[in-house]
Amino acid sequence: MASDEGIVQTWLEHLSCLHVEAKKMFGCYCLYCDGQAVGWIHDSVLSLREVGLDYLPDDIKRPKKNDKVQELVIPLDYANADWLSRAVQDTADYRKGKSETLL
Image (cartoon, rainbow, N blue to C red; front, side, top):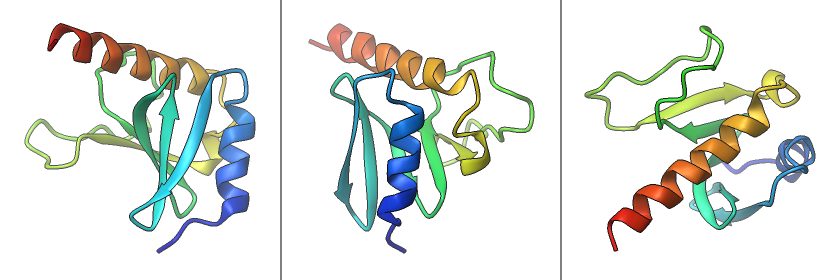
């Protein structure tokens, strides 16, 4: 199901303190922070890649180690949460550091 552009804009507005962009692909939007793919916006949720952040609320469901998809599903209700921009930036930083170690 394709994401509504208004919902994508809502997520981007709440992350406007970061260098983020969303690119439409595969029927949803890939969220990039500092050039790193950090998650997907689909329907009204942000699926943020799981990188082991320990400060997220307990009600954000974490994937199990054996789950094929290693993403945190964050409902639109959390778009203005004080921890969200930090989580997106930390995910980008982690992914950038991980990709640099592979070079």
